[in-house]
Image 1: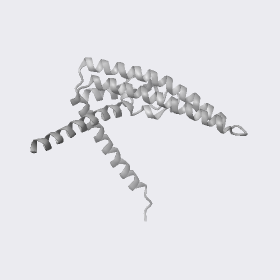
Image 2: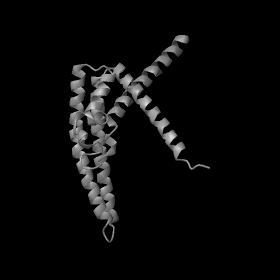
Image 3: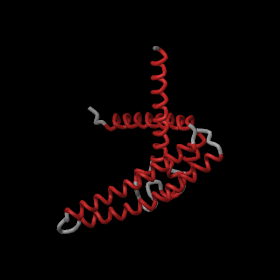
Image 4: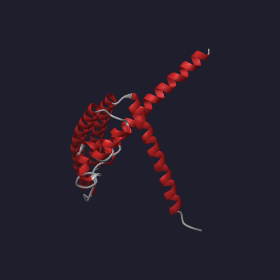
Length: 181
């Protein structure tokens, strides 16, 4: 009987580890992709055009992430290639999204807003977002095949630590922003 409990516990731990690993890679790859355009070069300026964009902001950040998991040169090259390809695809998709938002503004500034046109545009925007999400997912899966389970677990730990730090930072900011008295 104890072996059944142990094997169930082990299976759950393996599934949790696998899920956490995929989540870590997903988070690492998607940190900036959700943000959409913020100015001429995107949220992270000219860095958004480089491979590091996909892994959290800059080529240097990508290198730090790869350093933190002791990635081999072969892994580094492959992750850089994946990130660069995804970044190029997502740049084109961001530009398409920008055009959709401009059309949205045009519709909303008309003397009479055409509800059917707005709904059709909303559906186009959802489809465009879905294409971006699919491309991100593809990059995540590709990167997960390059990194080992141990490396993905290290990324998950690093990301959890970062989330914990950010939560603490936000709590401290809210405490400072509360009115005195």
